[in-house]
Image (cartoon, rainbow, N blue to C red):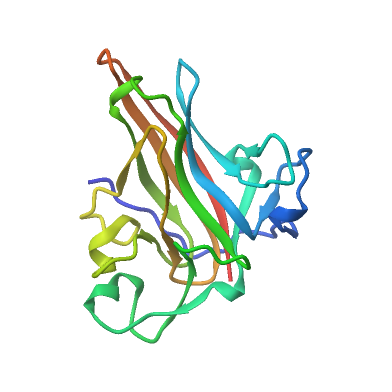
Length: 218
C-alpha cells in the first residue's frame, strides 16, 4: 500500500478569494473558489487519455467554466468549522469535541460544495462503464478524509489520507454525479494528488493520469 506524505509547512500566500457567483469565463491561474457547486473531481476522456478537471456549475456563465486543477485554489472558509461528534463512527475525524473543517455533502450556499462527476464519460467506452479515481498523497498540517453520510460514516469513506489500510479509491461511473463530505482536520494549506485510470471495453488500459489540487482551509 502506498504511503501518504505529510508535511508541517504551510504554503505561501494564496490569491484573494473569489466567490463562484462572481466569476467570468475569463479567468487567471490562482483563482480561488470558495462558494457554490464545484465538481472537484470531474473526469473526462478525450479518446486518447483520461483527465481530471474542476467543473464549476454556474448558471450565470454559458458554457460552464472548467479549470485545470493546478489553476485554482479550493477554499474551505472559516464557516466550515465543524465539531467532531462523539462515538467510534466519527473517530476518523479526530477526537470528539475537536474542531475540524468540513465541506458538507449537503449543499450550503455559504460554502464550497465539492462533487464528483462522470457526466463527461460516455456509456460503453470503459469496462463496467467505470473509471477509478485514487488519492495518492496529501501534504498539509492535518489529514483529508472524504466520506458519505450514513449510519456509521467511518464505514462510508472514499478517501482518508490518515488510513493506509483503505484502498483510497473511488469508482466513478459514466453519467454519475455524487457528493460527499470533505474534511480537513486542521486549518492551513494542503495539496492533494489524485490519479484517474480505467480499462476500455476492448481491454486497453488508460492512465493513470495524475492531478494535484490546492486547498486553503480555515
